Length: 149
Image 1 (spheres, one colour):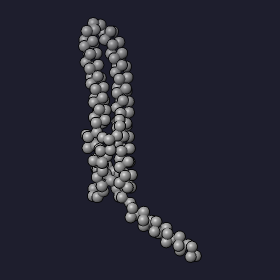
Image 2 (cartoon, one colour; image 1 turned 90 degrees about the vertical axis):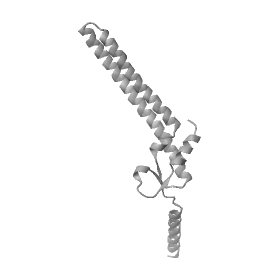
Image 3 (cartoon, one colour; image 1 turned 180 degrees about the vertical axis):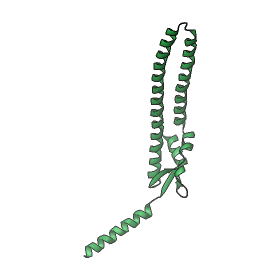
Image 4 (cartoon, one colour; image 1 turned 120 degrees about the vertical axis):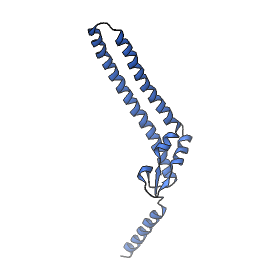
């Protein structure tokens, strides 16, 4: 019985110590991080360039279409261009998703590192915080700027 009481006291002390050491919740302004992260800017430029390539593709194909003289040639051309454009759209969507996931992963990893350094329990998006918490946005930006691409 004495051992049980001692075990409960030790357990209670550990729980209280854990609560005392808890750093709380941090929050991050994801949009601000994106705006200040060079890799994210580079990815945005790359994705935007692919989007512009698709627009240029359509403009060029429209010029070719106007130069065709028979309805059969026009129909065949439309079908061919539709297939090509669909493939380009898929490639664009895949590239965009892949690059956005890369950026998100790098930001998440930096946020996790800051969370550990500052002994926080969790990180939330700033939009989910009404009152309280610790803003770690600048710390995450600094971590990303110091990280290798």
